[in-house]
Image (cartoon, rainbow, N blue to C red; front, side):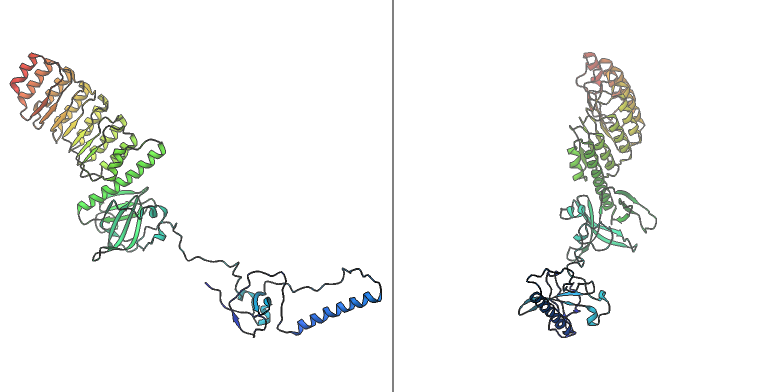
Length: 475
């Protein structure tokens, strides 16, 4: 912004003339003028007389004259804060002129502008590091924080219209939501041109929490709620329940992924690649985490999303070296899940203790109807616990696979007597359990009473000819 015009003067200027130029520095030798030119003329006369006096004194007394330091030497006027130093061009070069504001009828020195060298300059550019406001006001890229700027140009992993409650006016506004990286943006969109008109706000999902659809105080209808790290609540809802389920899962999975990445980074462990692929596309009906060790951090993160899922049907965690703690967390999540129907937990080294955890899960879960526990040494006691809860469940099992679980004669007898009246079981696999003819006779008795079984596996057991003769009539 240019400084205001100030009444100053150059040499030979007329009083009252305005200029915009200002002196950049103070010169080493200054020539000056006064509005009253007699003052300059008097100074020249005094200097001339002093020089003549010294010359006469030399000729009258001694051939040499020592300088007298006590004589006052002519000095230039001091530039005070109340004077203005200006540059004056003329035909002989550049001269510097000094004007006292009191000589120009300026009452206060503060009326003069500061020197352009020392005056503060305010930049009109807004800093791009402004903290996010998460409001409904328009936000250009200059108002985005670093995380938002890094994600703004990415392709959205999820997008769509949702109704959102305004921050100031608590009315419902239709906004276009986009999930890019860890940031949820929402825009105003022109429906006719299908063009995003204005960015209305964004939310960093780091340290955020997603809450399911429910009735909330101060909101006119049931909706989702996104609680940010700044404890602000963003209320939004879709046109259908399917849209609500979609955003509930997508945002919940993204928040779980952020938590998982932070935990892995802090612990120095390796990320589970299968789990990261699932986070990239959580809208799946089958999730496989096989053949890769699954840590407790991954299990906790996975279980957070299982509570939100409505489309996942098959969960497979085979040969993953799953610990008892991880299995306990998984069972708690399966108690709340209402979509998974098939569970694969083969070859994880589960014993009797883990079998009791699975039994408690089946007591509560209402959707699981296929369970695969192959190659886990749960033995006779573990199988008995699982079989007991199967007979009492409101949803009966369709498939139970217990291959290579070290059942033996006792375990085979226990499970056959419990499943004797199970009318919905269609497939039972008992391969490689080392039972003999007595176990075969128990199976034959169960088959004679159960007409629902269509598939049974008895390979790799020590069944002799007597056992086969007992089985053949029931097949």
